[in-house]
Length: 391
Length: 242
Image (cartoon, rainbow over all chains, first blue to last red; front, side):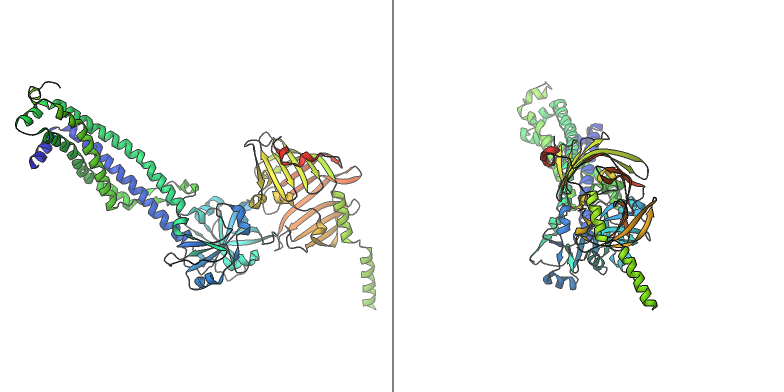
């Protein structure tokens, strides 16, 4: 076995440029696969983390009519907070949110918005709700960075907000923008205006009512409450999970093309080796090696190519990938327009499992591709191989 | 003695004032008809440009209305049907009929200052508002009553309104609609009054969303015919696709 390794290594190094070319192509495959998967994992981590922090918390209780994908349901999606959930609100494990539709008039333009009422004292979501506390009679509001940029809103601006109360009667008031928050979660930013919950309840004539309640991330369990349905974290994160899975699946196409190129190169090399080294094969057999051992030797040469490629990848790939993990990859600002939680920069995450899995995958594939052309050796006649006759 | 004189004077002034309810009733009667057919131009003045949308409308009472848009080319063939408190729109581009409800009712009609819900409102003011005369004013040389309207039912779009009614013709010349907070939300100005089939009727209405920039939306009616028979099939969903 040791001899086989020695021979395989010498043959590979002896092949010179051909080996280097194969190794470079293979090593690029290593790096791109690990980088792409790391990027997807990094996005997944960041998106889940941000969505939990800004929107979903540890799960949500929805008023039974509430459907975030159907705005028609919003007018009927409010109810008094049940006593069983009020206990959790009082203990700081739940934050109620009331949602209604309204129209904002920034600089005389008309913008349909969702008005969200939240407790200014809450600490469950990252929203800087404390800014909603105001000593003056003026209603203060928060908007997200994207919403502010789209509508040219600045902190301190006074803007007219119009809405309809529970009976459908119009009301309007000038609100002051108390702050602009920066979030990667578009569903809490775009088209949303956040104001104090008690104020919104008063404006809507819905005292003590809410549309949904967000559970603290580390709070355990949920209770069954009539008229409310509980949505756990995984259900609320389903959309982003599915998008990431889809992106991940899409990545297989890139891996496929890269692997195809690398495997073609290895396959070609193997075919050429067997063709050019017939005398050598004949000599091995004449010296007493079985055909299986000779096939093993050639297969090992191919496999060793991927081991050397892995070492080469480590030499230039580790610094490159580590640099990207620290600096991150900038994402165009318009990405949030797709409605997905995406930071300005994505920081790839390379887990040990990801690296080991990729190496193993390439190793196995290379071994198979190296073995396939080597099977021809089994059919060779050693005497004719020794004479170098084409078979 | 002074109190007596003051009371007598005030009583005599009150006696001269007509009943606000009867004024509004006359306005309602004047403005409504059993049926109407008219072509109209909606001239929308935006911040940057002005565009005109032409349409033809058939209406029966207050609850049935059917509108077909004639121009511009982009809107041509779009049809709208209102039956009671429901509204459907047919778009020839998609060849589909959609029902407008919920938040979509708050969207503006063809980018104008009118929303679909403005079109859905019950125009019979006395059904929802307590009315009283708030004063008199001359508008465009016409002497008008100012009628103040305060909602007595909770489910109205505007809690307070102000209506300027021509004393002689008994038609509204101006209306202001207010939010509960007192902020002026919308204003309409009616002009180009013409006597059609024995009644004075405004041929131009200017709608203005007071919170939005722009000069508002002019609604110019042409070729109005009142109390003409309209076949029932016009007010059916099937006619939208015809």
